[in-house]
Image (cartoon, rainbow, N blue to C red; front, side, top):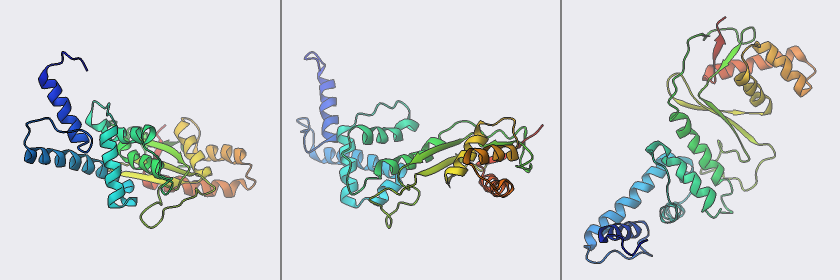
Amino acid sequence: MSEHEPAFLRLQRDFARHLRDPAAAPAPAGLPERGLGVYRYAVHANIERFLADNYPRVRAVLDEAGWDRLVRDYLVRHVARASAFVDLPREFLAYLDSLWAPDPALPFLRELAHFDWLETLVGADTRRLDLDGIDAQGDLLRGVPVANPLLVQVTYVWPVHAIDTDYQPVEPPPQPTRIAAFRDRNHDYGFLDLNAASARLLDAVCANRERSGRELLILLAGELGHGGLEAFIEAGGTILARMHARDAILGTARR
């Protein structure tokens, strides 16, 4: 900070430091304590409400004291870089990545926060679902299945979709958790918990432009070394139908 900085800028900086960290940064001289108290409360309360709204699962697994410490540490130490309101939730993940000291009692917290953020990510996607050229009732095995373009797949170490106040594992399960998050035709957020085979099938659908669902399942059976081809195709058709029912798959391409 330059020694030639105008006095009003120094006052603003000192005021902001105090509001972020009242315990360490004294308030500028001459400001009434009653007004300062209102501002201190408002800054903390607004940040707390914003984080609770965007990270409800993280909020749920922390008690009042733990949540308050996390919010205060974020407010004190993290310098947000976002220039748009919709990007602000990502700042909390940046804080967890760079400044947060992981809690051994909550080893899943970073992934749980990312799972919370997926809803914001999908909801903020400005694209609209374009159903032109798609037969919503098409045969998913005979036709070319079309994946929802507003879909994101993420693999986690922890079973983030199952963690809540009653289930907080301290050791990760042997198998990773595969989540497909998306926005459906009603503009509602949804996600699917996938196993390795169904995740690979959805990956294949997302990358596919020409093969039928049956052809994709034949290729997948070869990849997995599955012997009973027709049984595999029948089971795969059921999985495709379930994805379609949730709008992870929108239908088949019209020819």
